[in-house]
Length: 257
Image (cartoon, rainbow, N blue to C red):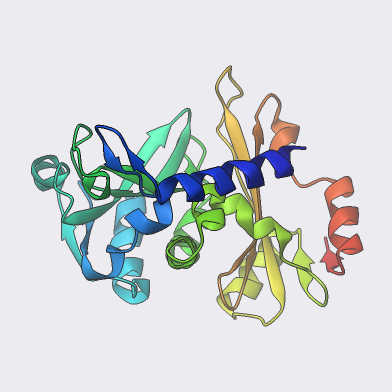
């Protein structure tokens, strides 16, 4: 039922995009609003010298490829964030988690929908109070996931509105899923073909608004193969389970614990 409602929503949205709206002009879908991304400069917002920021600066220089980019500080970000001439990649914190957020600049009250601001994608990368160090190792993969998603969202409204969960339909047959963090890290560092890393991002303590994330990421291509968001009510919510191992096996993967 949820899938059918999502498809119906997207169909109605695409139909509405072709119709004029009284007093507001034309409505544009996310795919249309992202069309200018490759020609706009992406500002990488950094302030201070935290390990996350140092890793982000280093990995952006190596991995960023889908648009021109420049580094900027919070003062410049404050001056430019209302300009639709820029996209911004920022580090943000919410409910105990750190995220990389790609957003389009603009004024919220702008009449031209193509110039309105919006959040393109939000990538969870670390626990704020209980970092594991893996977020520094995998920073390049996180950046590549953001880029891969943005490229796909520029050609597909299904991806643009579906978010990172749109990766969940990908088949796992013939791949090896590493549950053990040490084995996963080693596979990542040697870019092992067919290897998938299990990564969990969870806050230090459960709370009324806390969530956690579980991901499968390809060691060699940094492709996101699975992405799940759930409520974080107990530390066990932030771990891969036997049931998930069986599910991956049914999808054709070999699970290594």
